Image (cartoon, rainbow, N blue to C red; front, side, top):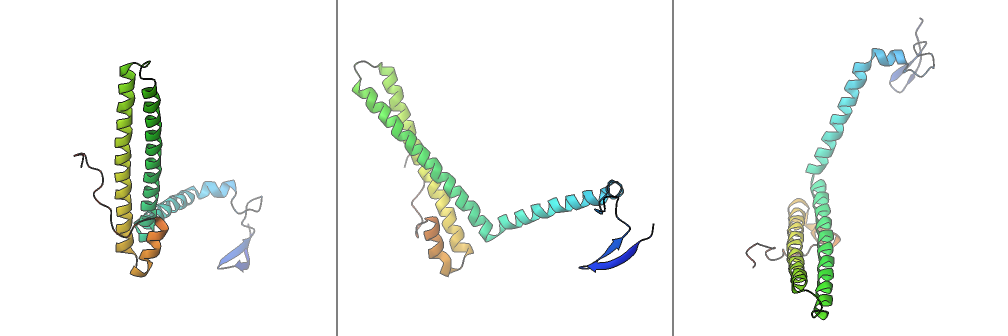
Length: 171
């Protein structure tokens, strides 16, 4: 087979006569002959993507993004806990109105569920406070002072850290 360099496309020579029958350059025979090269290329691509993602997650912007996601997750969890508390409170109120017709055990269970819901709200509020404190810490440690106010306003973080978050000692 005669192979001629006809012209250059960028830095690679364009060769005529060396392509497959469909003139695509990647015929079945070429793939069979270069399967190891294709596999190595795919493996290198995967490694590069993993390295890029890891580098981004380790950067200040990546850590900030991760903490912002955590803060949003904690806010959603707190909102769900507040909703559950409202439902439990409404159920207790409805059962207390019908106290003469409701079994005492049912009323006690509803009061226990309300107590659990209130405690869950405290736990979720503490978790949100911890997430906001972590976010504040990253903003203060990783970003220049000129950007602190803007970042705190953007992500809804107060200037001063909150008090102690939830603890199991009941304080």
